[in-house]
Amino acid sequence: RLDDDPSRPSYHVTPPANWLNDPNGLIHWNGRYHLFYQYNPAGPFHNTIHWGHAVSDDLVHWEDRPVALTPSPDGPDRDGCWSGCAVDNAGVPTVLYTGGRDKRQLPCIATAADDDLTAWDKDPDNPIIEELPAEPEVLRTEDWEGEFRDHCVWRENETWHQLIGAGIEGGGGAALLYESADLRNWEYQGPILAGDRDTAGTVWECPELLDFGDRQLLHISNYEDVVYFLGTYEDGEFDVDRRDKLDHGDFYAPQSMWTDDGRILTWGWLPEARDVSGQWDAGWSGAMSLPRELSLADDGGLCQRPAPELTELRGDNTSYDVVRLDAGDTEQLPVESRSFELRATVRLEDAEAVELSVLESPDGEERTPIRYSYESEIAVDRSASSTDPQATGDTQTMRVRPYDAPLSLRVFVDGSVVEVFANERHCLTSRVYPTREDATGISLSAEDGHATIASLDVWELDSVW
Ligand code: DQQ
Image (cartoon, rainbow, N blue to C red; front, side, top):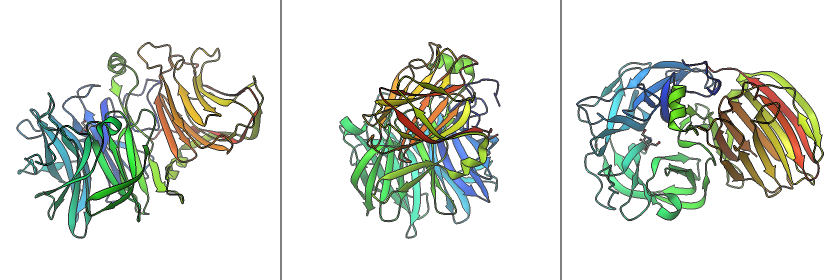
């Protein structure tokens, strides 16, 4: 593993070196958790994608495994083994993924050749779906004969159901439903939901349907954002009553796993926010988010909180019962770290905003302020995050609940990752690249009034490797 780069996260899953994008094939098998991911072993760029593999016994500590899927020179996946999912087919771990060949995107299937899921047998009959659906017509582009890829498969009433992401000619993105008795012969049913291209993108990648009992959630990735729809899914149709973004920052193409105790854990790809030359110089690109537990609140809204297992990583702790901030004061915390968790409850009182600044150099030349304002907005300001011109400097924002209620904040900083959870509901993940060795400070300040920070804790977090 490359590990001498201060931007390398230590408690987020990263590839040993080279390129990582989407999480794939998440499955709890034979007592271990398997996380596969889109991987290019040849370099830190997206090309000829394989499936990388990491395993964990506790969802927190990970071990690298050999590459699990490799494009076959004569196969339908010659140009890449793209995103897909894993299912347990009566004791046979099985993955469905998209093969790329020439200008086509071709659904493929493979079964595990061993119990450690290190070797996979590709089905000789691949691709398992050759024809694009006729109605509605799938979008053709200059690069692709049909935007038709990524797989979410589940079993219900003895029937396998599959969603494939697509774009519709003249329309927006869509999640297309198929049904099968054997995972190999699929019958097209139609879209369960199709978006309007102005608000939800032209192509939906990596659709995933999650069942919360009486309500369901469908999320899709539309080249920019991960949009989720909450509502009810029945008989092939999704009725939407709420819609939002799963994350307001650098987070894409998530996939989920059910734990044995009935929880949904979701991982997303955290793409880089530095240019390709910066990624090339680093020798690695892409990280996984922390696992997030998704659930529904009593009011029907979506809750997202860091998986409770992550508390295992906590080391040295710095704690305050209360910090009172007056306008103009800056409270420097006695912690210097690039891999920590911060938890706090913030009351604005009469302040305009509270600023929590992380990855801060003593002279403030490099710093990443997380600003919570009276307008009920959280902004991660990257304009001074890095003096490296290869790094992005824009500001990312999200709305949270009204300023007059306390804000519960959890912030995870890890090398170049800043993952913010607000009120266990809203998430904003940012990638930042401080260059200075001393950009490890944390400070708090209030603007135009006073604010109270209650129960503030900072924990150093250990590596997961
Ligand atoms: N990444 C995969 C595709 C998917 C996209 C290719 C989303 O299967 O549509 O690496 O990031």
